[in-house]
Image (cartoon, rainbow, N blue to C red; front, top):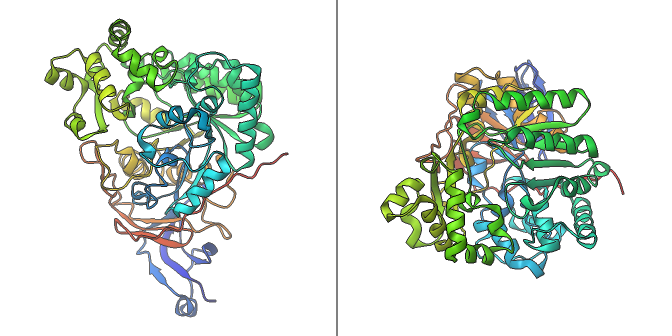
Length: 535
């Protein structure tokens, strides 16, 4: 039989978690047509096929699926998605942490744009509904497959801007209707970002009322919880309570403990709480990135009340001497011993580039300012378009979390080019190879089969994908060929914008998209739409 592609002489980690086996894979029309287990295609099959690749006994796995990305704010402008493809990611799920590109309400245009920060740059919003947004992504012809959640924060802005008030009945009806329409348009679920305004203004009742809309669609709820520090346990309890009250599938995003006082303690309690809830029947799971540092916007260090009213009100509060003084006291009190761990990774404007790569203590010392004051001035100077990398976790916690059998891997990164303007977190470029190289090969926290399962099939099933994530006949041919002994998360905190070593080939829907660390220019990705089970 004639195939478009045969990859032979490989060790196949098929994503199922079962043992690796020697074999080959045949692909046609973007899909896997035949899997050879403990055998190889014959000479006639190879002769008739359009391309035959000798895998030289390397590992062939499904393309990695990133359950937690923010590529929805960049994929339109960076469709080649080098940061994704060059680490073996073939599918991204965006719209996390309460932040999605749709639905968009023109009445609150400035609030929407500020909420999504620099991701869109000056790109105009050409959509309002989720359906229109996904069509716009399709027009960009991305290199990766892309699906999205709808953000609770985005829904809230569309209904009521940055108001701190509880939604009125009319506003709640607006959010519920917009959520349902987004799910019917193809969103895979709803996310929340409860440390970010306006998500932080929502109480548990508001979140639960919205989450009740999800089970009829078999849609997931992912949450950047209200606290990942001193109050991690109450935040986990809130997430579990939502799962039990609504019946929704709950994914705790990038699970971690960021305060040194609770290292080697709190995550053991949080995992125990999740296990107990799962034993009771609650649908509670989590994802994780394999790094000691987190990354977010620098204005996340500002007290939540300062955002009431939106971007201009925040800037007004940071400029007003009285409110600024109050904020400096509050923020410094919560950042004792922490400013030196917070590094600027991106700052908008040529006049602010000097700060990139420096921590807030260094910036404050150079300017002769208090660290909180220096932070506020940088937010104002960049119009809020300034990001940070924050060192806050310990390896023991990371390894314990990773060893759990109900967690998957997510980068919390996004589609970037190799010439991105800044020093972003290396997770954008190296998350998935790092799991294999460091936590599997070097540390032995996971077997290779377990690692691949957490990064492919387990994630696909969790998100409701039935035709990706596993090397099985009939599946789409998203594939990664890598050398297990040589794969390495080359991207570092100092030099993150580089391809990972040891990845021989990356295929998206059967199309060669990267080879030996180089993007081929192919843009064969598809926009993925969740198929609702109801209505």
